Length: 323
Image (cartoon, rainbow, N blue to C red; front, side, top):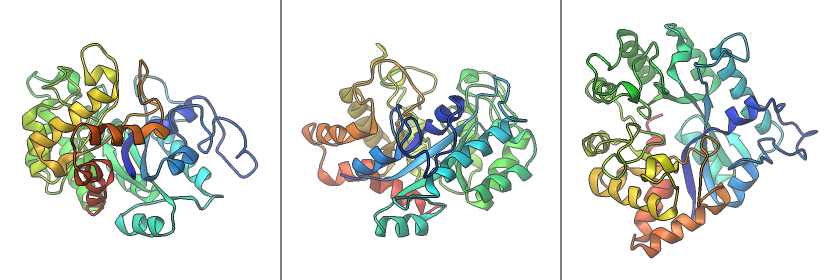
């Protein structure tokens, strides 16, 4: 089975631990992007049959920047990925469906860059084009705070907590450039603003179902349906707090959320957004090398081969056509 994962925080993990960019001289050192002590690395992704991994440049704007700005921190994380890809052809940067297909034909893993925290734009729309030139093709509009674009899930239910005026400009410019809008972490009101005003498909890169676990980070059934209506996908998150009330991340719980996304948003709506290297707690699937267990569990639970392939990689492949 092949896999495409819409979200991991591995670049931020390496950046925060002050790991130097990988090179041919450091390839044998532990905790680089090719050999990480975290949930995933490029070597294990290849061994597990991954076709693509979306790597988030995650920035916590509640903390001081490591570089001269939070925007510079994100660019530095882009550099970690590019440095790791510069000397080994088994993995390559991808920026659209064509480059993905070229990598796939060559047997190489496609690595997509994303940014998790649209606040790094700091009301400067021109920064979007800079990110685009760097190869960023997905932007998570908010993290857990209010920012220049809008409000996070923590503000849901309060008045006027959707997108801000600058946020609408950002959405329009993202669609012009070809950057996917990611509604994970966004407030409920912000989600509906994206739904009403976007002209292109959007996605929730790493979210679960609120009907199964009542966390505010999760999507309501109506949100899942509307994401599916717009040809978007929901990448099911593996973090236990979003899967079930006891906070444990089990394969059974992941399968339950996948099934709910399919039943609610349609078979084309379910995908993977593991959140590897961005979560703690108990994880039954605690590394990308164990992902075949998920496919096996889905088969045992009665999913057809076609359904499993759609969730694991084909629905994600379809989304690449919108880049």
